[in-house]
Structure formats: structure tokens, C-alpha cells
Amino acid sequence: MLRWFTTVILFSSFLGLGLSVAILGPTFQDLATNVNRNISSLSFIFVGRAFGYLSGSVIGGVLVDIMNHFLLLGVSMSATTVGLYLVPFCKKAVLLTVMMSVFGASMGILDTGGNVLVLALWGDKGAPHMQALHFCFALGAFLAPLLAKLALGPTVSAENHTESNFHRPALNQSSDADSGVLFGVPNDMTLLWAYAVIGTYMFVVSVILFALFLKNSSKQEKARVSAQTSRRAKYHNALLCLLFVFFFFYVGAEVTYGSYVFSFATTHVGMKESEAAGLNSIFWGTFAAFRGLAIFFATCLQPGTMIVLSNIGSLTSSLFLVLFDKNPVCLWIATSVYGASMATTFPSGVSWIEQYTTIHGKSAAFFVIGAALGEMAIPAMIGILQGKYPDLPVVLYTSLGASVATGVLFPVMYKLATSPLNRQRKENRKSEDQKALLSSSGLNEYEEENEEEDAEKWNEMDFEVIEMNDTMRHSVIETSGNSLTVHS
Image (cartoon, rainbow, N blue to C red; front, side):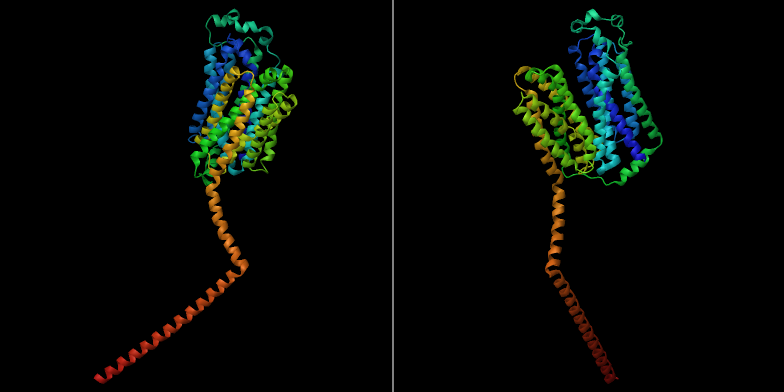
């Protein structure tokens, strides 16, 4: 029961992680207004958050092996709570960027620690739970825009500021900005409520994690983990490097398509903005839906099988996108298939590698860093290339190239992971086949009978030798006795 309760709390923490990551998108314009900047000049806060996320992944990978898991996750969620409460009060762009970096670092620690703790709790049986963990992240990312714009209502700043105001921030400076105040109450209280609601949720989950730490449940966890056999593949380091590259291409392609499909549909295909928004929504909708269905698929399918199916789906759909790039019907169908195919790859990859080599904090941090680098580098590179070649569907070429890369990398990883095991299995099967052939052909019984006959013959020969030795001993004794009698 304690293990199940801990798993549910982890799911809750990743729901909050998805909310925290995705809330920046729908509130970005309001944050820019809050610090008197236009959107283009404030885009570097994404770089600050990504850099913090990378740093947090590295720090989390080191700390998760030396600290109590519940204490580490509780501290990271508490830091995320503080960041969520303070972000709406930032009145300077530099301060907002620093806050986003700290905010991203705490989320990176939570991401790494959560993946490691699920593997520590469930081991080889953790595939459905890993799928559920990342489904909760996708669900949080799906709920964040609804919470920010629908549940709490439209923001005042979005209604009262035109596009020209964003390009002339000096005309819209508040008294706080004029006085040089770093913190201040935001002009739009809806922005404050959106971050405060998510921050309160994260605070409640962090309190439960601290309670689990105080109950000393980690001792039971460490005792159980120490009782498990630690596996290490023959090509452990090579597998981690290939998984790093695998997640680099996968996450980079996922974020790139989700970020650029709207602009691609409007400029390249000629869709209306409402249709392009629907296309963007169907990508993330099928992505979240199939992450939920993957919880049940993982109970009857191996992680490797799910990765192969995902690679086939993403390769096929991206190929159709490139071949029929201006066909709206194909674009809708292929986009939904592409989103569904991308849904299960990351959690399935983590569960798959755990079958062959034990994943600790540093190992988990390594491939999480690969995913974060892909999220940073590939969208930025595609943005530059799309500007240079506006007539080409660079986004679709990226999706196809990433699908080919992951499709080639996984068989190589599978070969490295299973080659020593296959050799051992072949030797075992060879000995078993030999025994089966001997028993089926009657040669085994013949050998056993011959062995029994040989044993009987050797026993008879030993008995005869013993009798001869006794006879010779008696004759020697008698002869020596006669000689002694003659001399006397």
C-alpha cells in the first residue's frame, strides 16, 4: 500500500510539473506586459528556463544517488512553488529571467528524481507506471492553457493593449518600473491567480512528500532496492550515449512539430488560423490520449515492442506529410497519427533500458539532458532554416529525419543490449537440445546402460585384485613362518 501511495504522489507531482512547464506559453504575453517588454525582446526567458532545466537535471542526477528521494523531490517542489508565487510579481526582465532559471532547475531535479524513483519502486514491472507518470505530465500540459485562459477568464492586458504597445514599451511603463522596483503586484490579477493556483497545488504535494520522508519510509525502500539484483549491460556506456542521441532527436522533433505546425499550416498550406489552431490541438490531443492508452498497452506489450510500433507510426506519418505536404486531408490524418506515435516513446525508452542495465541518478540525468538539449537546439535551428528557406517545408523534413534517426538507432541499441544475453541463451539451448536429442533417439539410455555395465565390470575386477592380494599375503606369511621353523 505504501508503494502504491508513493506512486500516486509521484503521478500528482508530474501533473504539477506539466502545469508548471506549460503555463508559460499562454501567459507569456501577460508576463511581457508586466515587465514592460515586447514579446520578441523577452523570448530569452525560454533560454534561461531551458538552461536551468539542464542544470537541474545534472544536479538531480548527482543528488538522487546520495539523498533521500522523498526529501529531494519535496525540496524541488517547494522551490518550484516559490518560483510560481514570485514570477507574477517580477517587474524587471532580468529578474524574471533569473527566476525562470531557478524555476527550471527545480523542475529538472523533479523530472530526473521522479523517473529514477519509479524505476526504484517497480523495477522491471514499472512500464505501465512509467507510462502513467508521463501521461500525467501531458495531462498537466493540456490543462494549463485551460486553467490560464478559460477557467480564470481572459486577461485584462490582452484586451487593453494593442500590438503597437508591445513595440513601444516606454509609453506603457508603470510607476513601479519608473521607480526601479524589482517586485510589485501585477496589473492583471488573473495572471497572479493562474500561477498561485498551480503553486498551491505544488505546495500540497510537497507537504505529502515531506511527510513520507518523516515517516522513514525510505529505509524500507533502500532495503528493498538493495535486495534487488543490480544489472549492468556489457555496453552500458555505449547504450547510454545512444539513448542520449535517441532522446535528442525524439524530443527535438516532438517540440519542433508542436511549436511550428501552426505557422506551417497558415503560411505553407494556406489554412485559416482557426483551422491551423485545430491542427495544433489535434497533435497534442492525440499525444495526450495515447499516453493515457499506453498505460494499458504496457501491461501486455514489452517496451521494445512499443518503441518499434511508435517508430513505424512516426516514420510512416512523417513520410506522408513530406509527400503530400499541401494536402489538407492528409495533413490532418498524418498529424494525428504522428502525435499518437510520438506519445509513448520516451517512457517506453526508459522502461526498455531498465530491463538490461540498472538506471541510477546519473544515468537518468544523462538521457534527460539529451532530451533537454534536443528541445533547445532543434527548434532554434529549424527557426533559422525556415527563415532562410521559406518555401520549403523544413518542419516536415525535420520530422522525417528524426524518425529515420530513431528508427536506425533503436536496432543498434537493441543489438548492444541483448548480444551477451543471446550468446548465453544459445549455449543453454544447445545443451538442452543435445539432451533432448539423446533422450529421443535412445542414445541416452544406451549410454546409461553402458555406464552401468562398465561399473559392474570394474567392481568385479577390483574384487578379483583384492582376492589375489589376500592369497599372496597369506602365502608370504606361511613361507616366512616355515623358514623361521627351519632355522630354529
